Amino acid sequence: MTFRKLRLLMSKYGFSILFMGFELWLSFAAFFWLNKWFPHWLSVAVIGILYVSTILAIVNRNTPPENKVTWLLIAVIPVFGSLLYLMFGERRLSKKEMIQLKNMESMKFREDNSHQLRKELKQESKAVYGLVKSILSMDHNADLYNGTASTFYPLGEEMYEQLLEDLRAAKKFIFIEFYIIDEGLMWNSILEILEQKVKEGVEVKLLYDDIGCMATLAGNYTKRLRKMGIDAHKFNKVIPRLTVAYNNRDHRKILVIDGQIGYTGGVNLADEYINHIERFGHWKDSAIRLDGRAVKALTRLFLMNWYINRGEIEDFDRYHMDNQAVEGEGLYIPYGSGPKPIYKSQVGKTVYQNMINQATDYVYITTPYLIIDYDLTEDIRNAALRGVDVRIVTPYIPDKKLIQIVTRGAYLDLMDAGVKIYEYTPGFVHSKQVLADDEMAVVGSINFDYRSLVHHYENAVWMYRTPALKEIRADFDHIFEVSQEITEDTFRFTWHQSLIKEIMQLFAPML
Image (cartoon, rainbow, N blue to C red):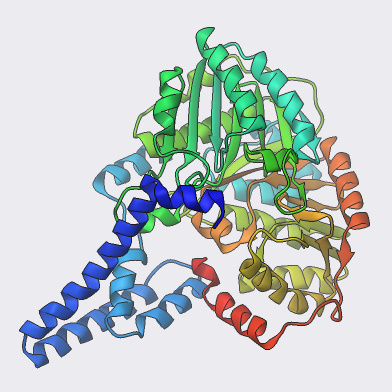
């Protein structure tokens, strides 16, 4: 047993997991105990009503068909299926959350020159204009920005030094929102600066996902940070309670300094992300630094999740009053994606689909996991079939071996249509980036899997004709050089691997 797993088991998180297991056992036990005390005909009637109502609830859900099929397979299990669906199947918002949602929908923002930028873009390219319009309609926080400069970092360690420099220069506030924070060189050096900045009067807000940090931070870590003056909180705090809410994790990576400089990408605040330690070979990740108008959207994205988590209304506008436009080419849309009903549509998936469908020359993709639904699979296949050079890069050394089996299981169907698949030979590729036709790119936290596309809170930056696209293209060229192109003969599944693959694919919408 690794140190991380042992620490998790012995922590309050371990207690919470054990208690939730006890809750689940108690629910089943109570049902069967009551069954003994009621007449047989009544028990049959109750089971029948539970079964029918569960089936109807699943069928009438506004969710992807794959998710419905998975739950229908579970629901056919007598008693167990219905109880599991009641506990984990569908999250319903409380009255308080409904009010929050209504308030968030009213917090729309539009940049002063947004209308003019969209008008000019429509004249230049109706296809790209349509993509922009789609993003803005799905995420009311998003907007189209110019007046922004960007720097692309192909590795976490290349971002790290600039990040520290920017943090040291902070004057007013620092917002940090990450899925994973782990004590070590990277985080400790950041924390040292944050502690000093608090003493200088800089406002520091920190939000991290409680499940994401279960194995890396102590359960009372926020108390330690608050003693330093950092306003730190956990997103979706783990408590001994069975709830589907744990499925909606905060997978975002956002860091904002003074509303002027912002960072996002795939890099978490842990040493493997800067290759200070080695976990799965060489860790290949990427990030984007924004300076200028577009940082307003990252600021608001952070405050949105802060509001969802804390229930506190912030004066959003005051945090970007001093934001200044800088000289820079191209257009930007930082956007968010997340679960229903907070987000009405699958924003991350739709952006990927639109880019793939509009590509005429090439589409390059990196993702640590490739677990996608029928629609996205067909879009990728169709792009290749119409002559687009579609290339997808996944890890050679996985962080989760079972997930790699499912990922590899998707290869053949895509390769049959002409899609080229590569595995990053030096180690683990964690970057989430898409580049199309040297015109558009996305860098962010959104993986090509159900968890990112359906369940998690995510974010990314869409870019159009920005200088960073050349840097992203150079990064892809390097990746292809050091990666192995997969063929039908590269590897063979054993019978038990094939069985695992089929089972995992069946339940992929819940993974």
